[in-house]
Image 1 (cartoon, helix red, strand yellow):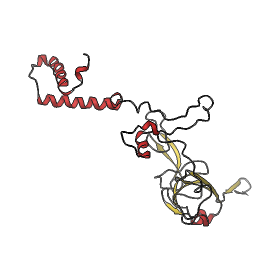
Image 2 (image 1 turned 120 degrees about the vertical axis):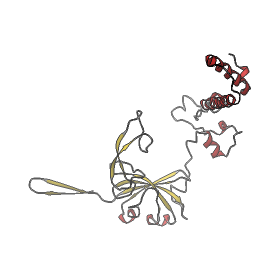
Image 3 (image 1 turned 135 degrees about the vertical axis):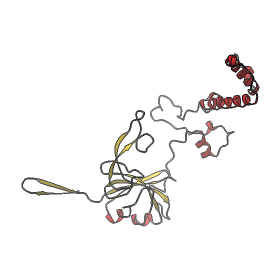
Image 4 (image 1 turned 45 degrees about the horizontal axis):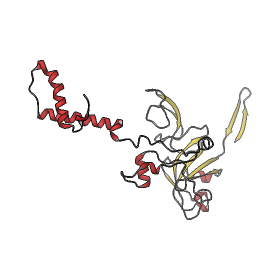
Length: 263
C-alpha cells in the first residue's frame, strides 16, 4: 500500500492507495484439493472484475498450464473480512436485515432478526480473497491441484445420501457402508473408529415419530370413512357414549392388530 500525506496548515490529510493484490482460492472437487494463488497483476485480475457469483470465466490468463480450464466464481471476502452474498447486485458493502432461513445468518433465538454487513455478488478490486471452482479441466496438470487426490475425511450421514453414493437398494443394510475414521484426540483413550450414529436407522418405522404420525393419520381417515358408510342411529342424549363405542367397533373393523392391545 502507498501512503501519501497532504497538509493544508490546519488539517493533515492521509491518503492510502491500495495496490491490486488478490488471492485466488481455486478448488477442484474431483480430487478434493485446493490451491491458493497470490496475484499482483492488474491485467490478470481484470478478467474477474464485474463478474457475478456463478459466472464461468476462462483461466487462460493465469498461465500456459491453465489453458483450457474453466473456473466458476463461488464467493469471496473483502479486505475487512465481509463475505460476498449471492443475489445482492452491487459491488459495494450493504447492511441487510437478516431473518431465519436466509444465508449467512443463524438464528440464536426464535423470531430474532439482525442487521449485518455483507458485500455484493459482483467482483471488484476491493476483494482480498476470491473463491473459484474448476468446472472444466484443461490438457495440462496443475501441481498440487489435479495431480494429487485428497481423501474424503467425512462421508454422508443421511440414509438417502448413503444409498445414492453407493447405489444401494432399500433391502441393503446401510450401516455396513458408513464411513469410519480415526480421531486423533480419542486414539489413545478409545481405539475404536468414529462413525455417525445409526441407532435410529435400525428401528422399525412404527416406533419412530414419523411412523407414529402417519399411523394415527391413517387411522383417523379410516375412522371417518367407516363412520360415513355405517352411521349408527343414536339419540343426542347418548351421543357421547355411542361415539366411544362406535370408534371401538370401527377400530376393530379396520385395524387387524387392535385385538392384541389391552384396554
